[in-house]
Image (cartoon, rainbow, N blue to C red; front, side, top):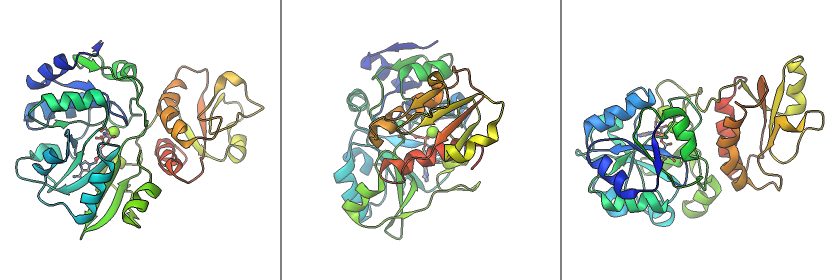
Length: 319
Ligand code: TXA
Ligand code: MG
């Protein structure tokens, strides 16, 4: 198993030597390596078992750094950076030559992000290179929101996990690209669409699901927990599961006819932020529960509810 600790110096020195370190961000934990070191980047793909056609996000400490990696900043991108960085937002922008093709899977754009987690900010400030970091989970699986989640799945493949506690957003960053200067959301995430639209006006949403998407990580089969998950209206779905032991992942209220110990409620008070924080940890918990299938209730399609529903839909076998 990996060592779990809070030694930022140690994380920095491993990264300088081309090693991988799992790092906390406000969204989910990342599996980080020097973005300019091809061997480190290759080992990110290997460790996650991730296909090399799925490009990585490049993390830096601030906008000044990001400017060294991108060729052009559309006006609206500049507004978003000023308003929402550091934070749970990734921008896809035309890349500069110095960003290795391996990081961007040969695309001429690069995904860039300035994370707000204080430990990772401190780490990035110590380094003279940016960090390529996908979520620290095996490809296709639910993203980790604690150091222990990372250790459970990748602990035997990495040396060090920088422990920054449970993540405070709980969903991956929202990914926004620009086509002819117009913003297009490729992945719903921790920064909700209404907040973005308040800042820059209406945005198009193009969530890719094909085999050649703009954001390949948004393939349908993503976020799968270890048991079949069904997504929708529990009242309508329940009759399909005669004889199966059902686990229920609900928004605010339990199902009366199921045992309590097979249910997890994302936010009894109906707080979508709390629901987002709990989502991935709860999906993992069902693996230990004595249930055959997970029934996940659809949340209201507002604010972070949209991103939560997106993740559940992609995790589901019935949608
Ligand atoms: O919150 C997050 O974004 C976390 C933390 C660790 O920062 N990272 C994360 O990375 O979720 P990952 O690799 O699991 O997802 C990154 C997504 C993938 O869907 C990838 O296809 C997309 O970003 N992506 C990366 N570069 C891209 C590009 N140039 N154009 C379009 N999509 C890109
Ligand atoms: Mg991921």
